[in-house]
Image (tube, rainbow, N blue to C red; front, side, top):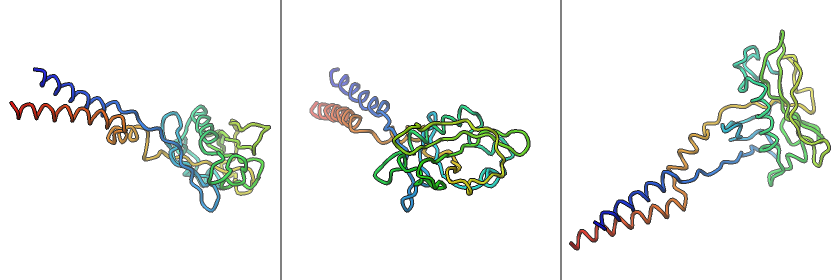
Amino acid sequence: MNSMKSYAAGLALATAALAFAPSAAQAATLRVVGGSLIGAANVDVDGTLFNVTFSNGSCVSLFSGCNNLWDFTFQTQASAVNAAQALLDQVFLDTAEGDFDSDPALTEGCLSFALCTAKIPYALFEGDQFRSTYAMNYDNPPPPADTTVINFAESIFMDTGGNAVQTFALFERSDDNLENAASVAKAVPEPTALLLFGVGLAGLAGFKRRRQKA
């Protein structure tokens, strides 16, 4: 009876270790080419991971014509603001790869050492116009502080290539969304889970030896 209890306890412990292993947090991975910040992977916006690329051009050229709401990854002001804040918190940072917060000119599409503005379109306006949110990355230290700004309507043909402080931020869903990341974390147990799983296996082995002796 005690052997059976040990077996059941070991099996339950091993199963629980795999089921409840904590998920490893993922951080955004900066994409840097030749010292220039061209974008990032796995930027967390409200629990969903996105890849982002900075690019100069016009809304009409970069967003599938910029004539339909579904051309935009974010279709509400609130979601665009959250995406802009994610850029400030997770992408425009000083790292070993470059001072992308202190020197905004290191961001692809921006030329000014004082400011880089990443535009995130989210809505259409009257005629050939769109609205966007700006992630405004100022050189450090402030003032002013980095901030998000909700922009007025702009022409879909306006090209950021002629503006030293503006670039577009193109977001797309990452293949590694949080649900997949959680599944991977469960499939690959962390050390604590492995330890508990080992204890469970030891219990099973002890039960087998007792049966053989009997």
